[in-house]
Length: 399
Ligand SMILES: Cc1cc2nc3c(=O)[nH]c(=O)nc-3n(C[C@H](O)[C@H](O)[C@H](O)COP(=O)(O)O)c2cc1C
Image (cartoon, rainbow, N blue to C red; front, side):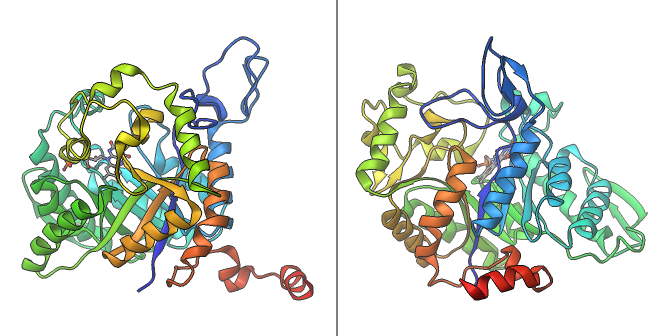
């Protein structure tokens, strides 16, 4: 069974390291008098936008052996659809996993956009279907639909999107959507349908994922908890005759030695707000986020108080935005934990590291080779026969 390994492309700046919270790559960078970063010279924008930086990360991770990149979507980010369309031209085989909340698009429009992107990229679009975490960000989008209904809407949305994909005419009369005689026109109709990565830990999420997910995507959790969650998803999906694969989104801090990796965490820890060590403050209605916080005995005082299992660290959210759990250790330890996750049933990973550009090279050069005994799906540019130009082939042959 091929294993897919994606990287994450930040859609809102990037930190220069886990020791600094402020972003410093491209034009999401706060301007300070005299500041110099990639994107800022003498405190003024220098024309290197964050989209340029995303292109650098996409190219670096494509060359480092990742099959594609996840483009997250929040009120404070660039738009991942438009970013994917522009980044596709910077890459050759790299896939774009676009995070989006179905409620904010009409499904027929989403189908048309996706089919155009599939035609433009040769089928490199992947969906990360998210249904939102509630709270103020949901209202930022003007979305007042409650938690479980957001999943009901997601499910209807995907029914309509799939219904119109091959051309129609398609009729649908649901709670959230109604279409009549809808369908994509030639030559948009019949493009390969994007793989669906589906997230959410609540019963409502698992019910909707059961119907639609190609991959059930989770944040990392201690492995027994993750195995129990997968078992729950499996039980539900088997009952309705489906069998999605499993994927995990994981932050990785891997270094030559275990000591070097923890030393980097210690350096970042010095800048953590002491109030955050008392424990989480609930915001929104995300079951998955609360679940993640429950694996830690708050309050904590030292970084390793958050090590829920060997190399499984639940403090990444204190050093950068995003989910709590990730892997910390030597290259060999991180690869061994990924091996264990594959044994546990994981078919696909979305890895991430800060800064995303440098860490894409590091993880690509030091961790991915340790996983080569698995059947890693290869989307590197040289894997596309038409791109193995004579000059490249000649160079390879003479070294
Ligand atoms: C791997 C992963 C990636 C996510 N990415 C995003 C994102 O880019 N934007 C967003 O608003 N929510 C994102 N979410 C959050 C989901 O929208 C949703 O709030 C979360 O899964 C909680 O659902 P639950 O209450 O069913 O657990 C992500 C969740 C997961 C697991």
